[in-house]
Amino acid sequence: MTEESPPLCPICGDDAPDLYYQITRFQVLRCRSCTQIYLYPLLSPEEIRTMFAQLYTSGEGSVPELKSYYAYCYDDEPGNPLVQLYESWLDEIEKHHPPGRLLDVGCGTGLFLSAARRRGWEPFGIDDSEEATQHARDHFGLDVWVGDFKDFQAAERRFDVISGWDILEHARKPLEVLEAMRGCLAPSGVVALSTPNQRNILDLVAGGLYRLTGGRATGYLEKFYIEQHFLYYTPKTLAAALERAGFEVARMAREGTDLRRLSLSPFMRLSLQSLFLVARLTGLETRLFVIGRPRSA
Image (cartoon, rainbow, N blue to C red; front, side):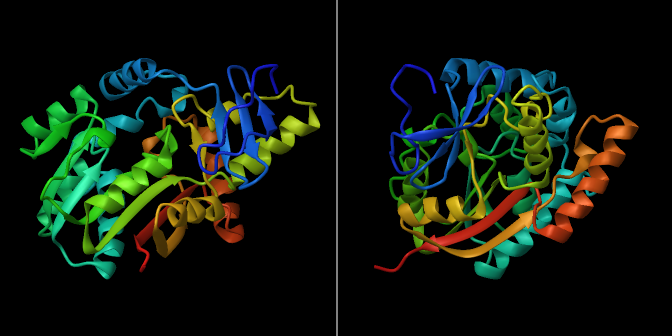
């Protein structure tokens, strides 16, 4: 740790984290109390907005493998692997709630809302990226708001489902986000979320290499612990965050990263395919999907 006061855990507020990894620009910390993994220091909101503007327009960022990742956010076509993922998530959501009013927090280009609308959902979205929401309005004709969800006023609007795909890892105050979601839900509503799984095969391999080299080998860790992700959840810590915000877990699943969306050399693609096969057999997949419902009083 540095000589400065240690950062508070964003989940439980504990002020005595352990150093999990020291990488080039950041420390990866682990809360002693609740075991939440989080990054320190965090980029400013202005830096994050600039970063996402680049990712949505050129794909340029600190991880070259993600160059093509955001390009899949624009076209609602059956062959798009991101559309296929959204359809599978909607299948799961509809097991818990029939189509109704849907709010997608961090809606980006609106692709998920476009897919949901085809299935009978009434779609609404919010995102603070001007570049992404412009596409949602102009290309998909969606009703989206631009801004930060913490400033969103639901008024008389209540939603049957609130989704948040890859937003909790970006949240500076994740419990406030979850509590705001709960406040916008209809009485029988549910939330559906996805986020990277910290307890995954990549962390196991890259972390092992890091420790074997006395902390010198950080390159592979920096492909996973990136500056735009502030928190890294395990199934345990994600469930705990939901419970602190007044939810109970209705469904928790581990999922793999779709390699079709990544820019990879043939060797790296084959290596990751092999690793991800091991991950499926051992429960060390790279992603989490969860459905929560407000806890009964």
